Image (cartoon, rainbow, N blue to C red):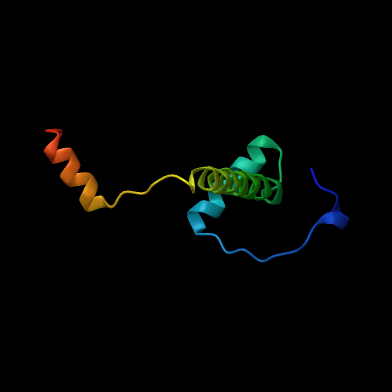
Length: 79
């Protein structure tokens, strides 16, 4: 849960079916739509942070073009 003074207001438009599903899930889980959306956004941002960290760790690796990779696979009899 978050404190009201820490919150910022935003208007979000959902597809009608998505909104209905959110309302039903909110009622079934005794949570607000805002809490569910906040949690989903936090999860998405955490996944983005993990991806960026992986990119940073791999930036020194040698890259291979798609064409080179395909030629190498064919030469080794893999395709």
